[in-house]
Image (cartoon, rainbow, N blue to C red; front, side):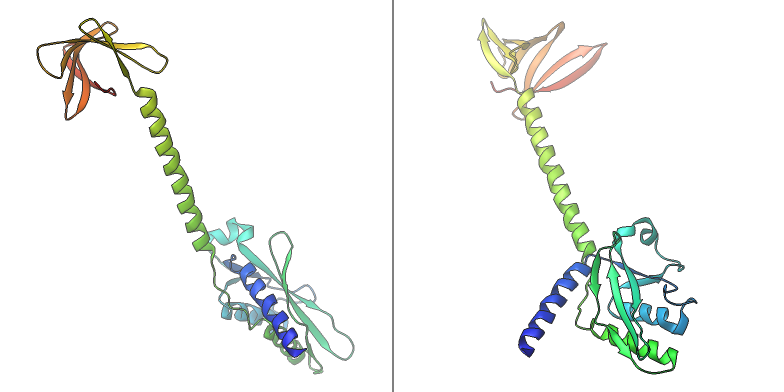
Length: 241
């Protein structure tokens, strides 16, 4: 029976740790609802210190904190302590919730029978925190963000490659023989250039609409070169001849 109980506690702790690893911060209220004053009996400060010991960046709701602590409500755990006293005992339970109020963890109830309030509350809270000591918290949010960033960049790169490939296909021209040369057509098909053979290898007289020039091969690539407003212009032509 003890082994079964231990295994159940272990499984619960592992699940709890995995849930909490996505949160960077813990918000501890400066005053608990069952008390009359801020940090009464030193419980709020004690809670903050315990959560810091577990590895969380922990702030009171009236502390100065990083910008993303205030700008994003869902990157933090909301800490609370519930009271269940009776005439014989002080009983406290730690509750951790997400930004939507979902309970992420409820501690074992800490109980103490001391008559002096400050002592009783402190010891009861410490006992409640004892049930959290098996938790091995390690913030994984930055890693998740980085992984998502890599995935997004990969998707963009693939999309760009796909787009470049589509552009390449759409700009590819095909050569159809005509008298003394070729006409270069696109996928529609539409005639884009008409080129005519010369006595020089890899040099054609070329026409593109009203533009007159030459089609010339440079480093195994073809270029249409022509003059416009007395300026020599050159545009790459995707074609195989």
